[in-house]
Image (tube, rainbow, N blue to C red; front, side, top):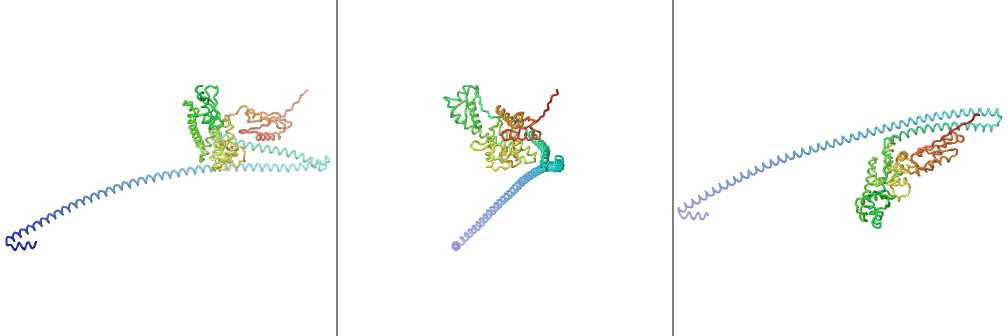
Amino acid sequence: MFATFVFLAQGGPGWAAWTLGVLLSLAAGGAAVWAYLYRVDRSRLAARRAEVGKELEEAHRRRDEILSNAEVEARKKLLEMMGRFERETAETRNELKEAERRLAKREDGLDKKLDVLNTKERKIEEGEQRLARHEQELAQSRAQLEKTLVAQREELLRIARLTSEEARALCLRRVEEEVEREAGQLVEKILTTAQENAREKARHITIEAIQRYAAEHTCEATVATIDVPSDDMKGRIIGREGRNIRAFEKATGVSVVVDDTPGIVSISCFDPVRKEVARLALERLIKDGRIHPTRIEELVVECEQEVNQKVVEAGRQAALEANVSGLHKKVLDMLGRLQFRTSYGQNVLRHSIEVAFLCSIMADELGLDGALGRRCGLLHDIGKALGHEFDGTHTQIGAEFMKRFNEPEAVINAIEGHHGDVPALTPYTPLVAAADAVSASRPGSRRESLERYIKRLQDLEAIATGFEGVKQAYAVEAGREVRVIVDAVRVDDRSALALARQIAKKIEETMTFPGEIKVTVLRELRAVEYAR
């Protein structure tokens, strides 16, 4: 360019002027371009500043939103924490109140036990005092007897001129008779006093337990008959050539008796659970109307499942009703099976629940653990639910069964010993025996056949009349008492007491009976003379 400029300058003044104009134009254009670029940069800078301002405002707005949201969340969390704290505080306060209530209840229980212990201690002290008085009286009687013996010996030697050996023998016989008489009177007095006190206390506890637990007098027995609407239905139950009834008996394991009795079909089976399954299945077959071997098998399976569910539910409800917790599922199943078992017409499960409450009440009256008493009473007949595959009495197999589930020793001993098969190792065993006798012997609890009832009365009278000196014996009050009339010449007052004890012991050894049997010996001496 510079060379061009020099060349043009050398061309003359015209060219110089034109060149200058061009340069000036170029300079003006460059200035204009620079000014334009400057304005563009200023506008871009302003736009950028505006964008930055907007972004800054947006950032401030977002910051404010974030802060407000954070504040709201913080307040929510604070309220939640305060609510949780208040709930936990309320729960803790309730737990403290409950603990305080339990402590107060336990303190009341301890006070009651302390009162019972004080009462027993006072009675023991009174008994020791009476015993000391009796010992003192015996010592005085012994001293007096010795004085009498010496006096009689001297008198006999002086009057009868007997030898010392003969006099000694005579005095010993007379002293022996007197001592025997006085000892018999003293023993009779002590026994009478002890029996009266024990009988009064036992009567109070038993009556209190029976009154507090008022159970029904009779229990529902298992139904073994099914109502049918018509004789045509009986024919459908039997089926062609008896195929339906054979299929039913094979599926259920029962015997179905279809006789001429109108409107009734009987079911016979030694297993009450299977009998219940058969009853439900036959009722549903009659209601459904479709009676054939395939339908019979389907309904029997459904009824077995339903009865098993009833067994489980009955065991669970019995444990809840008796307020006994912590029982194993197998134990609950066995309890439920007792729902379908009876003893002399008495439902064994209801009997077990009744015994549980009676044991609890009597244990509380004696200052023992009522909950443990309920557990012993509820499980005392668990062996009756076990099948024939177990060998032994229901007390033995029941105790062996409960040992598998780590039951307390008191429960095991109560199950095994409530019929006197083994010695009582805990005070709960005689309580269970007493409650079992009360539940079985109260009026209306059991049904007994006429033949068995008459035989029991005859056995009681035969046992009583088998003793020497007994003239007549009568079983009264439905076999709860035996009145024995003795020969007043052959049996004196002291022998009557021993005879009553011997008859009672013989009845205990040879007979099985619920409750207790009272033995009353009557002795009457009549002196008759005629004046002529």
